[in-house]
Image 1 (spheres, one colour):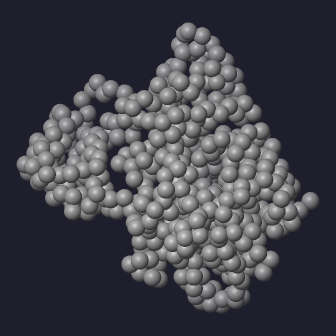
Image 2 (cartoon, rainbow over the protein chains, first blue to last red; image 1 turned 45 degrees about the horizontal axis):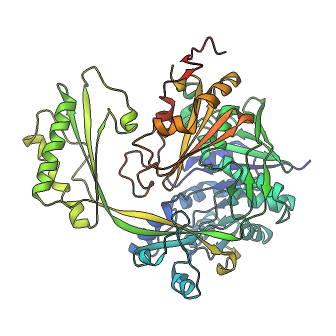
Image 3 (cartoon, chains in turn green, blue; image 1 turned 120 degrees about the vertical axis):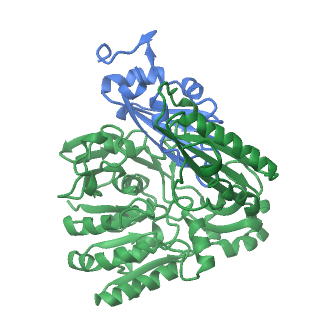
Length: 452
Length: 112
């Protein structure tokens, strides 16, 4: 029976660059998928592209390519990634240069058409409503501050690239799961309406898309038991037929694959388990079971699928004011009381500056900044605590009022403070997301395969 | 006893929605967490933190429960003023819960 092995080489933009290289070097896989995009990533990339038209994609991917290219060629591994962000052409050019520099003969595939920012006014004219799918609000009020607008698309255009012989495929906002479903649909010839088969690819993608979160990272069950956490083996899925797969990890490396590590990832960011909606299929996780079949091998079976949705998800990023966050440490004795006293002084000084905030949040790192009111009462005196103040404002000027107020506390405030990190806190733009739906035929996705 | 002693969990985010999947550390604990962790109890636990509704899905074949908590992250990762914008620590916040079963505090030795 034919078995396809796929590695998950990247959980987000900022994950270990060495991870996909280690999969290629230490194990035998047919494909590696690298997911670089989280909800906020495209807004950040859009701002980078505005400042420099060459940017707007995950530049780290090009660093990965330089190391991994010889391994891809030698071991016939294909690499699929959404590293293209909001500048797929830019990423493709950089990738082509890396391939040329390597002297290897590798074809590059890419998908264009998910970036619909420039089409939004025309779509509005055509009567596409784009109401917020959570709140039902009309879209027009946020369009003046729109930063990016990208459609989440599925596996089909990636399968097109594979049919065209691409060795490396770069997309923009393909869903994380599409990167992994595509090679399976291509290899096994799964029909576009074989919902149970397609859901197997979604399950595969879902388990791989967060990298080491399924092989011992963020492992609540028993984090102390994870072997060699300094060199975690990233995940590999083995798929032979619809409805089941085996999860394992890169051989000769650390980490683990247990029923618990798989379960923790299986329902990560899942809402209704019967309705995991993707552009390719609505996957049903409600009857999935897991079974340890060997060391670091877990069989996952029972995934089902239902017909894909008619509309695609569109996510519009827009700006919503500014955020500024300051930290101020205090030490023993009376650390918490001093930090609270400093917060009070700080609020009085901001009031004198007629500070207008949409929201102010004060926390004490070491006491309650993570679990809030659920944190237990501290009875003993703290050795140290860090005051954290975070503010949200309409304008950058307003947010900046906090910036010069922190350092003077070291001389002017209660005794025993020091700098926390370097320099004055800087305001940052706040991005908000507008999730909505648009008809499939409003989006024209195109696949290309080219020589480097 | 705290929920942490009989369950493990992971939390994730989508916009302003935080989900926590909770699993029994041993199969025999599943019935306890299923009985104890009602949506109402979880809502009460997160009072002042989670502003919206909480839905619960039962996952008996993996001895788990999935909680979907709306308006849980102060507007969501992109706009939240929380230190933990993504709610990665929401799972631990749930596992802090003191639990009682059949009117008494659960003891790991008696419920096995």
